[in-house]
Length: 157
Image (cartoon, rainbow, N blue to C red; front, side, top):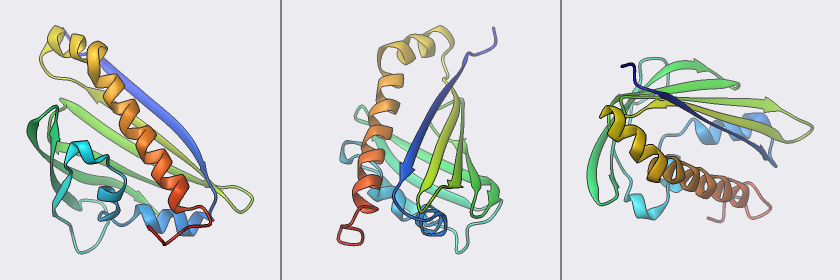
């Protein structure tokens, strides 16, 4: 049986110009700022330059279980798009596309995550019980931090 693929998609309008928004998301160290504290997210290694093939390793906790996660930048098209793909981690598949589109002085950012869970029917059940809700909670937190950062208080966080 082929594992079910899930898709999470969210669009946010950020009150800042495209170049500034893309520059912020181009810095892996900002991942920690965008991740809720309950995940205890910690970056282990950052490449000297973000480009296709660059890898970022980090650690976090998912429901108290320690997780090692390794992602690779598989697409890098500044300032409009990049894709990070999980090489090692909790998902059978995790591909996160970040798209950026200039609006009138603002930026539309669209996140699309395609993911599959391991463990067949148990993974599907876990998705229904908590994985989808966890992803929504994480992205809601991220959206709030982004809006606050790019508001008039920018740079004071």
